[in-house]
Structures are given as C-alpha cells and as structure tokens.
Image (tube, rainbow, N blue to C red; front, side, top):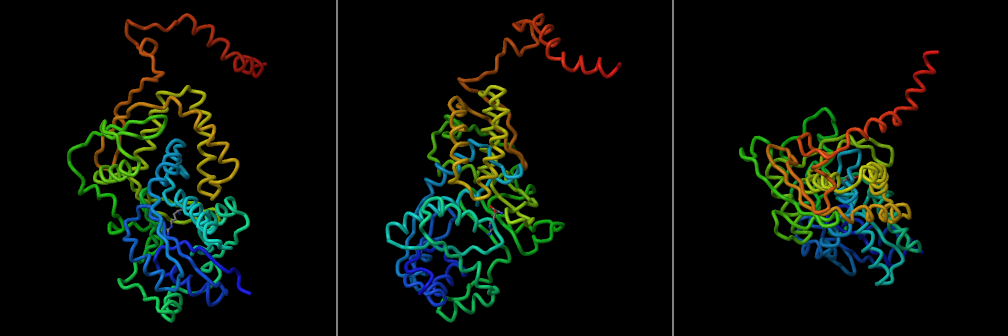
Length: 400
Ligand code: ARG
C-alpha cells in the first residue's frame, strides 16, 4: 500500500519538484502524479515546464495563470495591511503560498486525488505555509513532502533524477536559492550565507545599482480607491499591469532592495535579500494616505493589527480564523482611504512629497499658524490641566 493513490504536486520545473514525480511513484507507491504549475508572474516560459513534467512521469500536467488573483486577493490585501515582516520584508514569497495551496486543493478535489505534494525541505517557512493552508482548505487531503524526508544531497537528487531520465540542469545552476513572482525576488544561500558579505551586484535583476540610476528625479502619482491602488499617473491600471509598471519604474531608480537577517518560524535566523520595488512603494504610499484619511485612534490601533496580520501571513496562517477576523477589521478601516499620493523617485529613495483626498481629515483652519487660525487656544488650557492631572498628583506624592 502506497502513501497515496493519486497526488497533485506543486510543480516548478526545477530539479527538486521534477525528482518528486518518480520518487513519489517508486518510493512511496503513488499510482498517479498530476503536476500543477502556477503562473505568478515569475517570468518563466511555462509550456516547457508543462512538458518537462510529462517527460518526468506525470500523468497530467496543468498550468494555472493566477496572476490576477494573486495581485487582487493577496498582494492588495497585504498593502491594505501595510504588511512588512520585521518592518522590512513585503512578503512576496509568503503571499504566493496560500494561493498555490488553494489551487492545489481545488485541483485535487476536481481530479479525485487523495493527497497533495510539494518540494519544500524541512528548514523553511514554505512547508508550513503549504501544509497549514491545505489543511485549512481541505483537512481530508494528505500532504506529502518528499524533499523533507528523502535526505538526498543536491548531487544525489540530480543523479536520482537522471536515472529516471530527468536531465541534470543544463546551465550551471545558480549558487543562490531564488524565488520569484510578480511581487519581487527572494534570494538566499551561496555567498549570502555570510552575513558580513556584501551581496554581489549580479544577484539583482529588478533594481539598478545606484551608480546606474537616472541623475534626474522622476515624479509619480499613485491613486487609491478604498485602500486599493488603481491608477498610476492618473491612468487607470489593472492590478497586474500596475505592479509590473511600478516594479519597472521604481526598480529603474534603484528602489526596492532589502538585505536582512530574518527570523524564520522554524527557529532559524537566515540572511535574506529581497527586491520588491512595487510593493515597497505601494505600502509606503498607502500608509501615507491612511495618515491623511484615518482618525488618530484607528490609525494607531491598526498598527498593532498590522503587526499580528503580518506575522500570521509569514507563519502560514492565511486561512486561519484570526486572519479572517483581522481582515474584517482592516476592510472596515479602508472605506475612506481613497486619494492620490505623489512620490519622487531618485537614487534608491521613493520620497513622498504630497497627498490629497476628498476624505482628507487635514483641516487647514485648525492646522495653520497663520491669521486664519480657527483653533480655540483658550480651550487648550483646561484640556491640558485635566490631561496632566494624574501625573501632577503623582509628582506631588513623590515630593512628600
Ligand atoms: N524567507 C522568505 C520567506 O520565508 C523567502 C523564502 C524564499 N525562498 C527561496 N528559495 N529563496 O518568505
């Protein structure tokens, strides 16, 4: 008896997920492997990937273009939550996993499979995101993770694959581990494992080195409707287009590089490099528009919610009940977050230089130091007295 009869495998076309196909069948007695490659805007040609799965022994090879859903339902939600893990990482990889899990489960249900599989190892966050998301969406499906158990080195994995006709990678495979999609690139391993070592310029693809960026600043305007970015320089953009263009425009000015030591859920600290121009610019702009349109208390309270939200997403709990509850809170805050933010892109910085909204709470008559001032200065006196009363009493007591 094998571990499962029919399996839907998350497939990338790389060595590990290709080797998973014969491995599941030979070692774990799986009868049929259906592969599913998600198009998340990683820029790979997916037709060769589709064919490679069949050559590697898949009974069926599927490709799903989920770019639009990815941006609309995952990236935009994260922007509304101003989600930056450990204050820096805009979750490009973490956001893709629950969507891949969702289509894996849908496919398993459609094809009557009894398990889903993925090629994650036991050291990363992605295994958690896949396993927990799949369990949340269909707790009856088994989850198989061959690479978590097979204990083969890179060389052994390639040799195992070759014995089943899976060609070794043609170009000398990259010394880095790279995950890429519309939201950016995540780069780790190789020389980057030394946290004192400056990342070599060759690892970057979406962002220019500052020395090569334009010597003139570029101004852009991003329009939001209820916390969702909808226009670039007054032109309406569909979600995917907006992200692609912003990656290009901001990356051209060297914006979007992150070099950090990150705390993984599995307890390991890792050195991660990210390029995520569009997401960083959008989160900054969105946060700024909130500062104009939300009341102080909602804005301050939301920061705590954002922190929890970000950790849930990073830690694989996208489909958890707490996440759903936080979503409801965040949605209710976004009702008036509409308007435009103007930014200046120059030499690695996206500086916010202006913002406006029909729902602005900024009140010139109250804010001004000029003659038009409408603020009741007299009223401040009593307010300050009452506000400071507990502290005054505390101080008096301390002097006794
Ligand atoms: N550390 C990031 C995360 O957990 C990115 C991992 C990306 N994977 C990779 N092979 N580089 O979301």
